[in-house]
Image 1 (tube, helix red, strand yellow):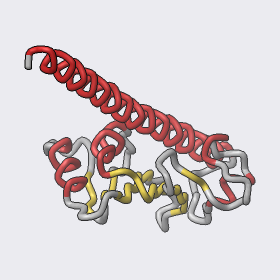
Image 2 (tube, rainbow, N blue to C red):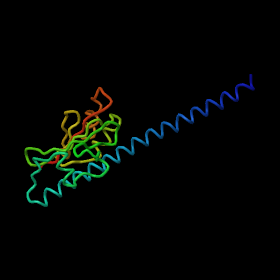
Image 3 (cartoon, rainbow, N blue to C red):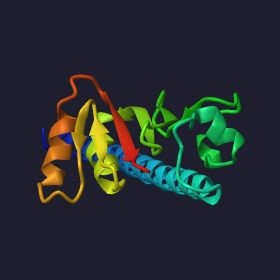
Image 4 (cartoon, rainbow, N blue to C red):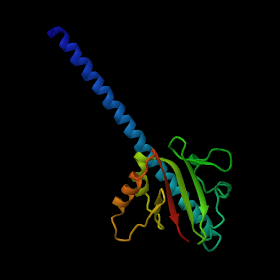
Length: 169
């Protein structure tokens, strides 16, 4: 009996070790995707803002994915090559930029992993706030925005969420 117990414990310890490594790799993958998406969002917002301000007053009301691509405002990593679709780092995720009636613009990220929602939405502060699955959260209003973001992210019954960053004129 003692001869069997040692190898069994060794195998179980090895399996637990492999599970821990797999879990750590999975978590690192999510951290990387949030970092990548945050970087793309910052670049996209800055390029759109600078491009429209260079031509005078900010008025991006006619902005679209195609206009942003043709204007060189889209980071290389978001491009798919079809001239109109922007892809996010999550499997099946997309990004749509569009103008607002006020002259500002927004970027809507669909298919964002619910696991990464709070980190992504809370890690990028757009001056017009953020909308998560239809719930609008405004930064700097004195409220507990971290809790509001977490609540909106956890309100999704599916495994993905839609996050829209708002940039008023």
